[in-house]
Image 1 (cartoon, rainbow, N blue to C red):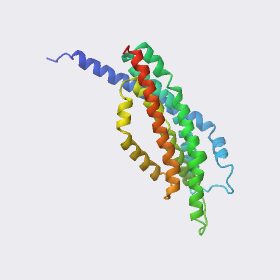
Image 2 (cartoon, rainbow, N blue to C red):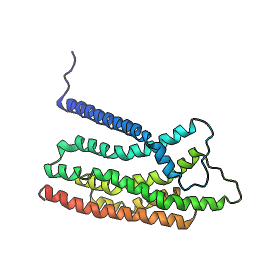
Image 3 (cartoon, rainbow, N blue to C red):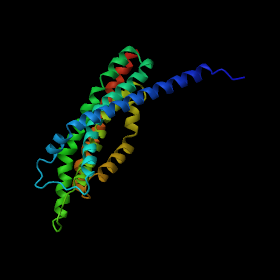
Image 4 (tube, helix red, strand yellow):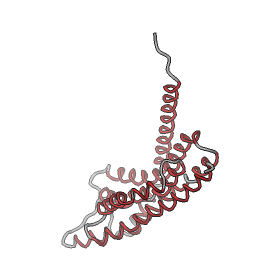
Length: 242
């Protein structure tokens, strides 16, 4: 005789089903976004190579397709981030109070804004600094850039900053949910600084100046996150009447 699922088991299965639906919706949004971005990817490509003195080389006919997919993928990530954030919000919404629902919903548009700011920071500051350093090292060589390698390098200098710039928004969101607190962030400051320093060293040239120029903004970003967490924590206490 088959056993009847308990209420807890039924709820767990329902939550898994809802999570799967929301993940699927996010995936569909990403695929639609990358298709839409692919329509304009040639214009994006031309804008990014506008200052190059030479045309980028390709080693195989399929190389340019992969380059276009990478560029379209970055645009799709920027578009999909708010969609993914909204799906997470919808998933946790039943457990939130009305004021918490409204407050956390207001953070979602900032996911795309912060990602764009991070990409801009990497592209306008970090990428030219690193490229100039490497070009000075290669003066004894004849340099020929392939499109695939060039954009792989560019994206490795920009996309990580787009993701790191999400830190303040994610911290505020998790603070309003009660998962993070300013005390926990302050307690984990040393570990966070260490991880941010390692990240900075890994994505910059092997010289102390570049490391410092990248590490300081990341530390500042963390402290901004801590400050915003304190503000969000006070708001949360007010919302729950404490």
